[in-house]
Length: 214
Length: 214
Figure: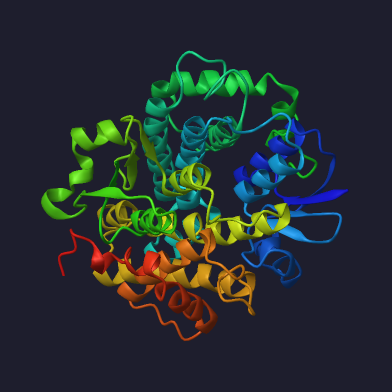
């Protein structure tokens, strides 16, 4: 059985959990506590699995470890083609990937735990300054998503959920956690709700994970 | 003919230029000056093409505009399959994507111009603090790349250049620009040099672009 090294609150791990569930791939959840004791991701044992010391990492039955959430999801989409996570038409595929990348490249990395910790260490950013930093990049990205997602479909890019929805739902969890004002993002919230009504998404929620602590 | 909206020094645009050249796709270069007059990327005219106000954007002959460098490169790889930019074997593909994503997700977005500008506006970061911020994330990512790239191949992941090399070469341009000490990254520099010896890479260099100013 595959092992997913993750953390309940990591939105990158959340993405992979949704993809595994959509593909109906059973996996073992291995919690890597990013907070307790300074962070288990920094141990040599975890670094041996993932040299970036980030979550998630997916250990295959062969023992090979894959890293980077979107690379892992691309792998799962190849391994189990149905349901497909990206459209087949090349331009539609590029547009769906772009929506996913607005979140996975233009929001999430800038708000990553280690970046926010580095803001504190380098610029004495306090808790409120860190939260404001995170909200700034989420709002900036969500404004772009407002322009890029489809308006008349059940999900972000069409009639079925895919990679764009996976990234959106995970990022919305973070937006709510850090108190982003979501008033301007009604369409995005509608997509989030459509997704969370589905069991593969609901079962992947942070609160539903065995390592969730509050 | 396709139009690439880019900027000579943008490493994301640099990636797309390399991919277009590897695929032998002729394109028109449209410079979007990210610096002059506060930045042409912020205009409404450009925002109409790319709501994220970032470069690059690729306008197809149909007038449709694709955004996000890695989504654009994925599109080009579908449009013109040879030479392939990712391995065919699913695990090898995932590993090559992960190397690309260490750069495109874990380094580049955190060092993006607008993020560094925001550091200045929010935390009074001066030029040296900004450069140190950039070098920190480049070194962090390059340490990971040292562990992930192959040691005994001509290029990062095999005998031919691909997406990982494209991202690496562009990021190395930035590393040299901002004075990162490259002593610990001999293997990565070797890959960079192997790539730059090839015309598709050399022709895509920032200095070779029509909008290069110094």
